[in-house]
Image 1: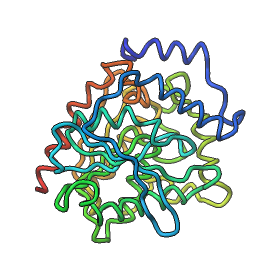
Image 2 (image 1 turned 30 degrees about the vertical axis):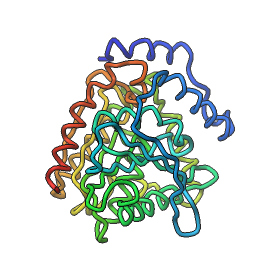
Image 3 (image 1 turned 120 degrees about the horizontal axis):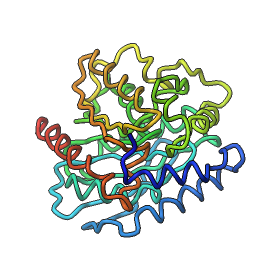
Image 4 (image 1 turned 45 degrees about the vertical axis):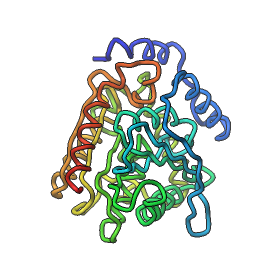
Length: 311
């Protein structure tokens, strides 16, 4: 059942459905997504400092932004990978959310951008995220401290890129204390019960996401590739402990729950947090709907526990 605080957004989505993404140029979609973010957080959380950075990777540079909350002790650093259906999103679209998460968890957040489809199809964005994790892990003193615990967090498509990148890095010396996946997408098939029940009108339309997967995969990627569909992963043993946040009224809920079960199958510690009555992307609405942030307290506590275990 949709939470009462979310009902106006469901009603608006049903009365004024969004244009199909195929009818908009990528730059226009990104502009609209950015404008939407501006009104979602009318009063962003104050930080001790916010600094824009350049993350140097082999042959390219990613834009990044470091958030230092009041009360921070540089003990934890969260590398944040934004959502946006693989085709939209940037540092500004998730600025309000990163500020709030940093304030609530009392950890530093390093948000990164990555190359977007369709101009840069799979695996460009994934390569960016994987190499960013490697780089930040080896240079953590530049963002926090030598002995800080590194956490990798992402929402929606960003969560997918984060977990796949960490699966690719599990046989390397890169040390990551935890992965936090906020309502991830687990592949283009979208055939679960929740994807049928909440197919449209709940802030994420399945038909729109299918189109965006086509943009992301281009003409040569295989949907059965476990880098595209993490639910098809053959071995996840050794990836970092996970916290997975799902929304009750999200078409992606069931596949995220299934991924939690897959991680447990391979012996990975998992905490599954379900936000009752919430919709896909609900945390981005936290600037307007305080109830959407209720689960952040639980998330902060689980993060504190995981970071504490490796100190």
